Every structure is written in C-alpha cells, then in structure tokens.
Image (cartoon, rainbow, N blue to C red; front, side, top):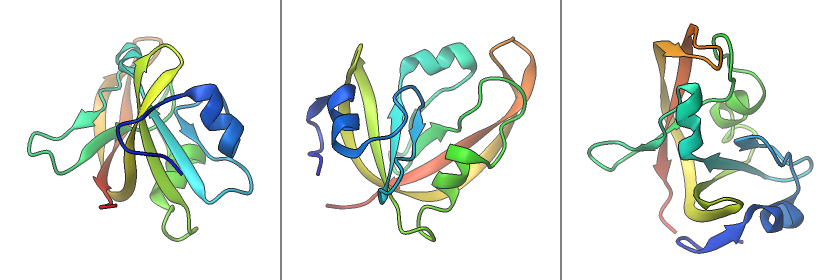
Length: 136
C-alpha cells in the first residue's frame, strides 16, 4: 500500500484510505488500518515524537490537546490494534501537507508522563506509546 521512505501528500493518503483529515491518529471507517501522523508542531502541545535513543522504538504521543490524555478514540485504537485486526502505519511530516512513510508499526507499550503542558499550558498526564517497526 505504502512504500517506506516515499513521500505522500496527506490528501492522497486520505483519498486512498479515507479517515479524518486533521487528526494525528486516523481511524478510517471500514478499513483495517490506523494512520499515525507525526509532526514537530506537536511540540506546541507538549508532544515529542521520535526514535528512542537505542533506535528500537518510535515514541509516539497520544492524542488530546487539553487535560489528561485518556485511552479513548485514537489512543484506544493504537492500544487495541492487534485485537481489532488493524495495522498501524506511521508517517512523519516533511513539509506542509507532505509526509514521509516510515513504515508499518506495532504497539509495544506505553508510558504515562505527568507534568506535560497542555494547549492551555496547564500540566497534565500525557500518554506516550512505544511503537516497534514490523519488518517488511
């Protein structure tokens, strides 16, 4: 479906599989995929996605811009992707509207991070998922 390292316009990704066009975690109806979009703009909301120091895991921040993050909606979709038979596909922002496909991932755990500022600069508990690449 997607080629690792290749760049895609986000609108073309949605044209192919559907789903919400604004969210970082996209769960297209009737599809067996969950799309994960990572952007440095997440730093504005206390998010800091990227590879772990040892390069084994991709740390992906859960969704929610204010208040404590919870295991609902997109966060729940990541947590339960195997049980629901859905694949996780990770993309990183290259430039506005264009994302590079990192590859298919799998959930490998999470961490609760207290004190992360929300969009209103109030401390909250954030969810950071650990994703492991699936060899193609």
